[in-house]
Image 1 (cartoon, one colour):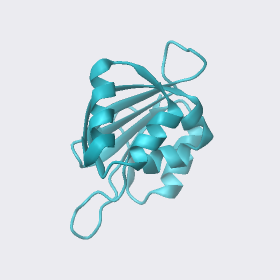
Image 2 (cartoon, rainbow, N blue to C red):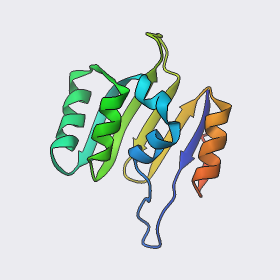
Image 3 (tube, rainbow, N blue to C red):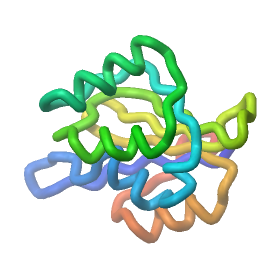
Image 4 (cartoon, rainbow, N blue to C red):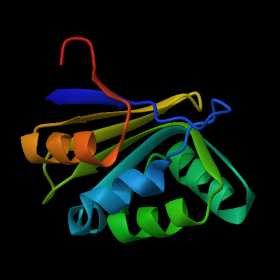
Length: 129
């Protein structure tokens, strides 16, 4: 898999992207995949608690549910989000929220990595990627 880390920040050092921004970039493929969530910590309200609960229950959820929930949280602080196509045993993309400081994305899609590089300002290769 290819991997990048995204660390776009505002002048105050606050991360300027969230999970919803990456899902929006992925587009329809994000909504049609099944997602496995783990170790999620999110801020603000019912959607944040629901994301955390789904991660704790270790259930795969439909992509459209993840997209909806990600749009209703203020911030995803930590978490791993793995997408599976057509009941595959291995994920085609893994998104990690890293302590409110970055989002790491790993995927086999060179096209998606190129889109990430164009969309975001501070993108670097993950070690070993």
